[in-house]
Length: 174
Picture 1 (spheres, rainbow, N blue to C red):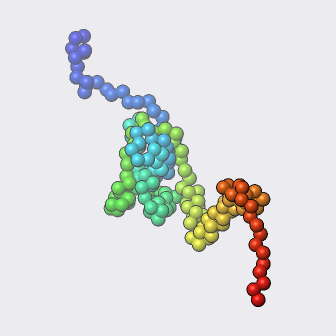
Picture 2: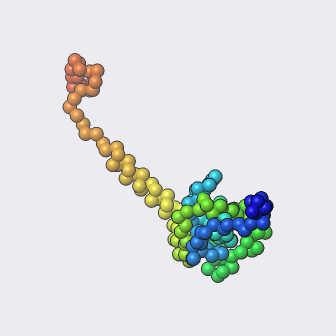
Picture 3: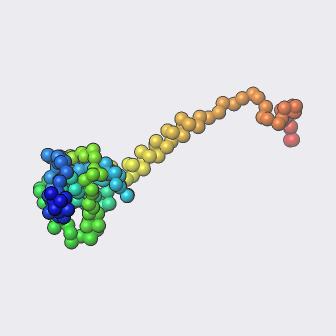
């Protein structure tokens, strides 16, 4: 009995956390979630590379990439062509690879990559000149509503209260 109390911990089986993974999340899933151990990004948007329920999730945080890179990576998801091996040669993309502690992950949402691609295409269809014209129009409308023209008043300006102003007479200077 005494020997059992002093057995090394290594000889005893580890109790793995009983955490059920999301049945729809898999390698290549596009997910967003709240992360309680965040440093720069409290709600990352991640392409899942792999995950170990109860321990960690690893993937590429798309918030650290530019639009063309994001579009390229998300388009690979539909064809099942995403893997870390396919991007590890690109230092820019690899720099956005992150590991997230499972205990800090909550409110997981899984996105349909095809829908995201369609929305990305729509957001880039506006001509920059159209956007500038829309912005100017909105600014003009706001100015008209916030700065209405003042009506003329018959009151004298402050400081001229005892002074009578005589209208000027026209002179005939020949």
